[in-house]
Image (cartoon, rainbow, N blue to C red; front, side, top):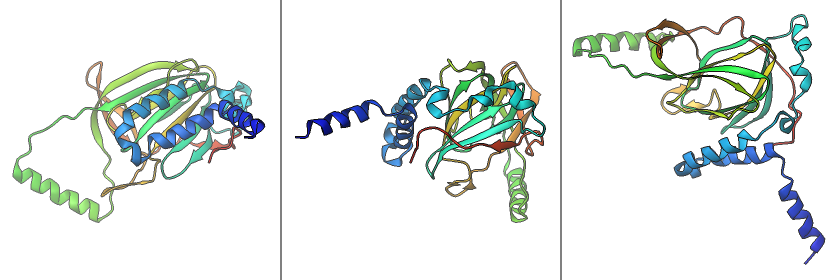
Amino acid sequence: MDIRHEAKSAMEIVNIPPIVSTYRQALHTFDDKYKNDLNTNLLKLKSMMNNLKAEDLGYDNTLSDPGTWRRPNKAPCTYVEVFQNSLVNMSIFVLKPGFKMPMHDHPHMHGLLKVIAGAVRIRSFTEFPLKEAVNEIDFAIRAKHEAARIAHGIHKRRRLFATVSQDSICAANSETCVLTPTISNYHEIEALEFPAAFFDILSPPYDTLIENIGPRRCRYYYVANEISTNLVELQETKVPDCFYCDQVPYLGPYLG
């Protein structure tokens, strides 16, 4: 037995960078082979993300300097692609002071979000399934119009009811936020008085196929009607002109 080799292997195991461990757990969590253990693995992934720090991801601290965001023509949001394959997307978003990432959805997706610098206000919404009685004649007429709309390739913007599932300030010492296909699937994220950065994991990524439906497209929304303190009506809208990103490279440990 080579004692030196054994000692080196043990040291390598101990010194696995936190983001590498998180990456491996994310791949395991969302692998279909382990779908029966999804909830258990999701909790483990969340726990690992709770401990992530900006330096674990090679975060460029100049992005937290307010002066960076006063440069002419600087985009209000900076995007860092950490890792992506057909199973997961891992990325960092940095928002300029006071900028609000518009409300958007995550169709048939799970997501985890961890603030790593600054602080943000997160408002999340869960679709509220209001049911209406529709007679057979009305249903047939609606179905005919819907078929014609689809045949002409016209996208119908959604309008839906939703409950407020989260409205809180999250900072680097806050726990990871989780969204599922049915809970907190719509959210908006606003930086406070300083630049703010968050790391997120989405699975499956946008633009992957939903069986029998089509690609996962990111849709944007606004609150069209506040019905009560906890119930709102959301209206789908076009991508807001104010929302665009520049991109910088990922500087953390290699993943893949």
